[in-house]
Image (cartoon, rainbow, N blue to C red; front, side, top):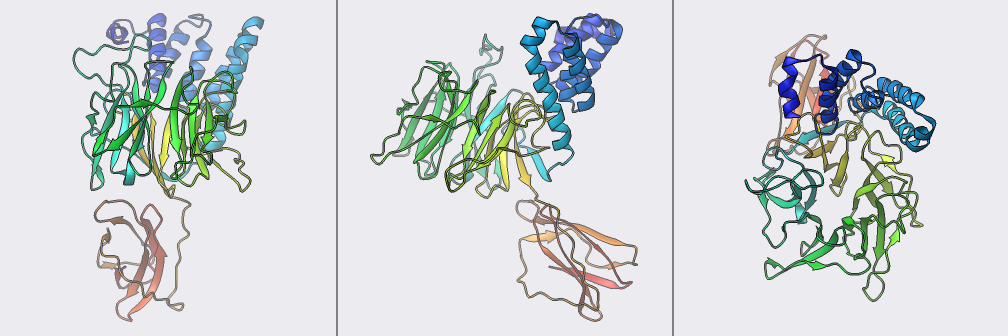
Length: 476
């Protein structure tokens, strides 16, 4: 791509050059730039190539221009030959369905804060699949950055092999990440897929034999043992990747490409321990979870009643989307719920790791602020917007709450206002700077009466219309 871009200033209207740059954009993390080049290629030469409408559709899809994407998908489908329509038609209709799903889901966005973890964790290469130790004190993740100047890209995808890195938390910030020692990182693909609730067992993926195997290492006398192959039906000849376990260690879920048991592509499987403490033969998690398409990045809540996973199926809006299911009293899983936009986008969202209260989590994706390729992000779910409570001076209300010493409100101590002014501010934690929800009283100092009260949103934001032209004091 770099060579094409060097040639571009000398021939910016060349259809073939624009087409090739557009293709490169679609195949990298520059997908949002593809429209410019592909559109130029088409308008310069509508006959540039037979799949130009498909490529334009993909570019519009990634850029969330869903109506344009649908039109281009339909044009491409219309001009397909009969034999090609039978072969490629179902996938084109699937992409069109994703756009229709997206129009509905994007129109009802969730209130969230999404934050890139920054250069301490993310690099200019792919970084993903965050797995946490007890109390989230350490984060293990996969990076495809070069180990040294002698590192060579993988011949299959021209990227460096997966290596395990870790970052430790200092207060509420992540320290600069480091590569795990050679006991866990060899010349093949490696990743940590799970750490037990007590922090004494680490489960790993090693891409050396059998398309990749699951292994484990135990913490003994302060040191991790050499990884050993995980037994109990997990050692098939197929590729096993993600793994997750309930807090009691009696139920495990993992992802496998076993074609004998799969509904299509990669599926989620599970196993439970019998009375003798042995793992029973794994079973497919069923058609309510698995689809004809790939599932990946499975995570089970410690209590075993909630499952998160990524899927290319269900009502996704493009690529892998993150879904959530709940287990009922009979042990059946609910219909998968797309966790919504802007967490999910037409690109891939993978390896979601929620907190125990599910109010925040970490996931991997590519965004405009990514440092390069996939990055690891933190998301905070703000919940529904809270209705503001106002009290007139004839409906006085008081509270006897203890003040919280470790928060502050970014508001003036004293204001002089008229009835057209609205007081706005944000409540945050003084140590972590995270948004907080709090009660806010507006006091008439002359009468020592509360004239208005409100509750800040979970984002910390609040606003109060001021009812009087007086000196007012805000206190928590």
